[in-house]
Image (cartoon, rainbow, N blue to C red):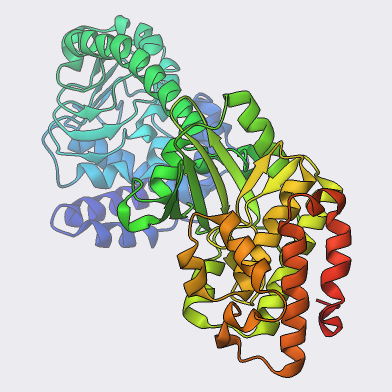
Length: 505
């Protein structure tokens, strides 16, 4: 009775299979369920032939097995086997592009693949996608033909190697990925014509090209890699991770990049043996780059000097970021304060006496710091070299290593005091004649000071007296004999007594 019911169902399935859409076929097949005594039939079959694949499954999926029997019967007839009641030796879906994808979608069929099948032909069906791996559930097959399709991706060599009886494997005219040389042993079992235009076997011509490219390309990659690392380490270390950067050491390439190739647009000053540029580092920091034309001694000495300068910390000293030193260039990189020098400030802004006095105190404090902490470091305190911060503080921006003469430092401070207090026109008259300038001020001191004092300060009676005292200190410091008997600390004590209200500066 059960066999009659199954046969009827098979006839119904065959009748509407071809004209219906695959989605409808799958839907109708899903609605089919085994009859009540189907389990008895399956058990009986397993007792007669235990090698049937569904006999080994526990528990048995009766729905899947029932659908398998229906599809198997229909596929056997579609493959034109002579006697499907007795045997099912081959699956032949060659040139059947409409139904082949549908059969391949029936995973339950391939899972219980009939053990009598020895040949599977799915050729010439324009199949797409990857290798139909479900067909390899049929591990007993001798022939598998997937030629003339559009399959791609990797060939499952490990699964194929489990099909031990396979003697004919045709994968020609597909688009599979080229195998590894180490996997080529598997395909030696078969005729090479079975893999023609499959993309699997490496082309000897292409292999030779790849070998040549590898032999040539690998050294080039090494050269470019080493060259790139060398460029990063010795030319643009600012591109390295921060933990690998030497933040104090700059390269010529870095400085060129920061100043647009040392362009004139970025040049902010020029002096005897040096040129100053404004630059922007890769991290956005604005810097002042001072490049020396005389190379300032040998490389090692210059680097040792710079290592000292980067340690300076005082509110009236420009912060030194680092240096550049090689055969072609010596440079010092400091913070960017602006272009306003004390000289420019005096000539253009006409500052009051209190602000001028504040600048002198600030400069003297920085000199005291250097004398106490770094006595080997001198500084340039000319009005053209001193900078003015936007908050009004003076900043020493240029340094000299090895200047140990305290008397020279005090003398230079005395000249600065006189330049800060006297008229700009007078200074122009004595430009280049420092001795004559000091002697002229000394000659008019103290009764005729009005002739030399910068009238733009608009002094009151009190501030005039304080100016007079300040000029007196300046003349004392500028005197070569007297300055040898003084210390910078003594000068500081003298200057702060002139205007006690600024002692907290």
